[in-house]
Every structure is written in C-alpha cells, then in structure tokens.
Length: 232
Ligand code: C5P
Ligand code: MG
Image 1: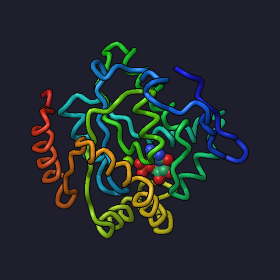
Image 2: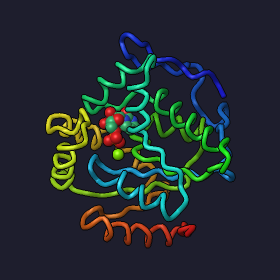
Image 3: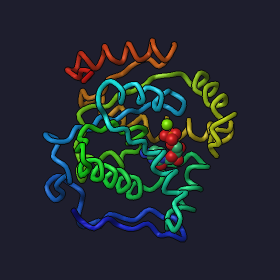
Image 4: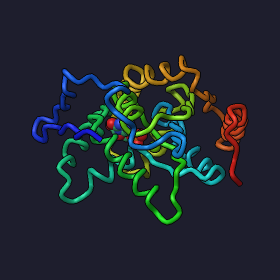
C-alpha cells in the first residue's frame, strides 16, 4: 500500500497525487482481493433512501453496512481528529470531502471487519463513491466493486423526505440551504460516477418512489437478476 497523501489541515486543500506516478492498476495493487471480499455500492441522491434500504439489505443479505457519511461524521466528532474542522465545513456546504480521508476511513473499517471474529467480507458501502477520484482511487487501491445499486428519485420527493428527517435528525445539512447544495453536488459530481459504472454494465437501478416495502421488493428482484440472492 503506498503512503496516503495528506490533506493540508489549515487550508483543507486536497493533496496532489504524485503527478509523475499516475494511478493505474499497473502500480497499485488493491488491498483486498475481490475474489475474497465483496463490495457493493449503494448510491442515489440525498434522501433517496440509501440508509433505509441498506438496513433491509443488511438484514437479508449478510452485508456489513459502511456509510461513508456516517464514518465522516464519526471522524468529525472524534476527539483529536486532525480532520474534524475540515469535514465539518465540507458537510455543511454539501461538498465532497477530499477522497483520501473517506477512502482511508472505509479501508480501516473493512480491515477491522475482516479481522474480527466473524470475519465479515461482504460490504455494502452507502453513499460512496460520490466523486470520480474516489471511485478510481478506491477501486484501484482498496477493492474493485461487484456492482452499484442506484436508487432513483426526483428532487421534490427527496427534498420533502429530507425536510421531514431534518425535524429530528440533528444533522447540520438537513436544512433547505444545505439540501439544495447537496442536490447540485449530486448532479454535477456524483452522477458521472453512476454513469461510468452504468457504461461498464455494473449498475442495478431501482425507482425509489413508493413505500419502503415496495422499493425493497423491486430491489430484491433486480439483485436476483444479477445472481445476488438473500442469505436468509
Ligand atoms: O451520505 P450522506 O448524506 O450521509 O453524506 C453527508 C455528507 O458527507 C455529504 O453531503 C458530503 O459532504 C460528505 N460525503 C463525502 N463523500 C462521500 C459521502 C459523504 O464527502 N462519499
Ligand atoms: Mg445516509
């Protein structure tokens, strides 16, 4: 594993990857073997129901759930974290945190799960990758993914859900101003990642309209078409 470039803690500037050493599969070996470790991403706009459907998938498919947003919020609140302030400001503005932080948090969590007594090796990674550089860096340095679940919902529905959630979530970004910024980031920065995986034939797309149960039924059907079946 090459040294992870560091973020400038004062300016928050993302580190440059050594320009003379382009990231290619030729010079980086993934930390985990995709034959032994399964990675499924779940993506969708803010409020599309990623967390809710992840809970169903964890229950029935034996996945370990890793939410990139939750890991970032945990790191933001961790005493002594050098990235706390940086994460806080990115989240408030709905911007994508520099990828090294998020990828490292995910890799650490995966290693902990793999080293644990029950050796969990199926991961459902929620809300990641949200930017092309995260996708490329994770796939090449941590583990190539099996597929991406995409929950498709219109903005007006997501806005309504998030404003409702904001009444009790305590999240700094569940307010109308932050939500609008998150939608913009999603369209401009995250959708190209979904489109890239779609071109590779690796996207399981499901309409995220309707009840939680209806959406989940469709999701199970689509996963079955890909040979991904419940474990219980
Ligand atoms: O997925 P969630 O809505 O919990 O993400 C909250 C925020 O965390 C995002 O708006 C973004 O600021 C940050 N984030 C990120 N990179 C990710 C996932 C989340 O920067 N892959
Ligand atoms: Mg979430």
